[in-house]
Image (cartoon, rainbow, N blue to C red; front, side, top):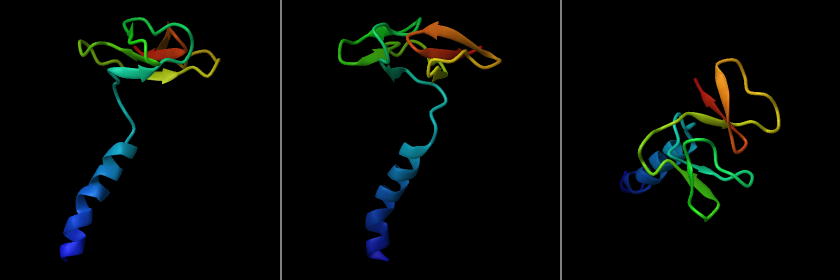
Length: 79
């Protein structure tokens, strides 16, 4: 029982880290520019600086799906 209690936080952390993100304040910089509404942090990341949460997904070079809009930087944002 004691061993289980010791590894429980690790298991919970693994589950939380694999959950899909619904809104991102920080995203990886895919190309040379950041998506609209994001600021280049000069470390390969783009951030909203904590002001807004946007739901983004990478475009992978394709058009955005229905209900999503292209915001540049290789990302689509949910409308």
